[in-house]
Image (cartoon, rainbow, N blue to C red; front, side, top):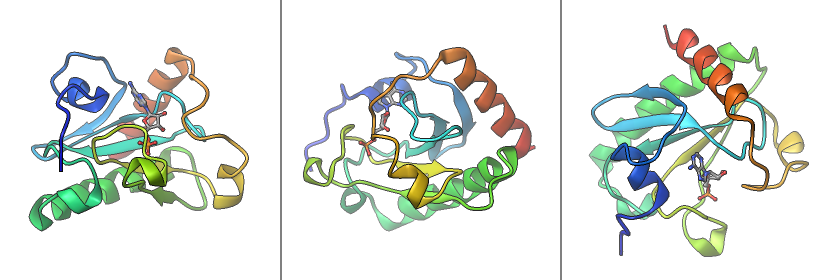
Length: 140
Ligand code: AMP
């Protein structure tokens, strides 16, 4: 693995770039996707510097999945969603655009997701801030 510590998410983790934060603990950070494929589209990333799913030790991945489950429950509640889509792209060939491991959490369905392009359209920051606040409230 060749981890680039200048990638966008590494900069967000170091506080060099802003994000609409939803959740943080010792191992992970969750924030709103700036080009969402659905309202409430949230990203959960490890603090561990992994590029893909294959680059993270199992114990770190377990901690990340626990955070992802927690965030998914809050996203589902905040958007009164009947279901949650969880996806993860490993490798540029698979469509990964940011080389720091992340899980996408969406209060949506596979069919709806197909209608909105991946990482294509910037969302209004005020709207993202409102969604982040809603998810934080659901986290309790
Ligand atoms: P992937 O293509 O699976 O690597 O997903 C990367 C995601 O990061 C895309 O959905 C982008 O919209 C999102 N993204 C890119 N830059 C930022 C950023 N600065 N803050 C939040 N999300 C971002």
